[in-house]
Image 1: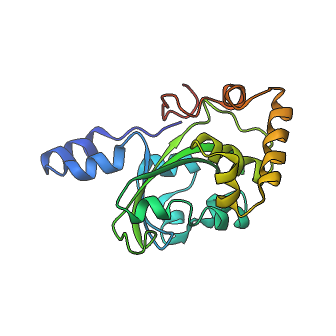
Image 2: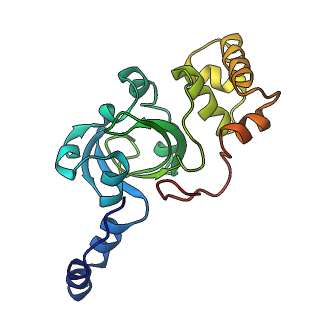
Length: 205
């Protein structure tokens, strides 16, 4: 259950005209500031989403919020090209709560250091679990699904993941078979609409 800000806390922020702090602390999406993938600051919504107190998150490498160390490493440079060009970046990926549950999140990022995109950056995290329940897919299947959702072709996914085209097609076919569908459009309908409007509430669309 989400913690509601106290009226005293709200009054203090409004009276001090510290509206930037108010917006950060109580934004309806998780917000974090990172330095070389180390979490330097986060807001209340991010803590609630992952189930950790703020003190347990600060100055930690992001790796422990991923299903595995390997998955964390594989996602490391995915947005570098977009961020280095000064553009915002987004994707949808599986992450892990403190209780061990895996869930889908939409991640958006902006770098303050384009020459080193992960040097200093700000990110938002929207919980998609109400729209897309987690299903037991392999790491590669999750990665292929996520990149398909970004509009990449099998050839582009093969380059992104350093796999052969044939291997990507095998993973894609397994995804279709697991979901009992015949094409990618139906796959997204089964797992959740990757292109639709997303609401950041814990459980409800």
